[in-house]
Image 1 (cartoon, rainbow, N blue to C red):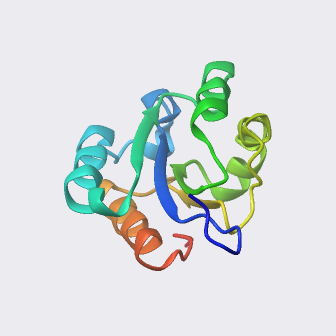
Image 2: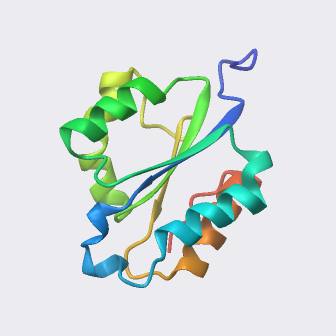
Length: 132
């Protein structure tokens, strides 16, 4: 449910695993990361989801069904600038703007599981992007 000012109230985490094949994410254990977010930060999120490639057609379909203007989406995925291009169609199909009210991109490139978890935790705590 959106607040009186139209800003999203809840948050959701939408992981993109880049099919587990991206060399820049080889130090990330996606299952351990998702489980840790669920167990330690689950009370701060409406839901979390992990998809192999959000930038592909089926990933865009998922985004179209899941994204809503009443939530702010944290997207741990590739570098933020790449996310702007690769996730743009999924956000557009859902009718959700890729602005600071609705989206916090978190780069997982060249990071390990612990570093990504810390960025997600910070984003959930104060909404600050987990940028380098």
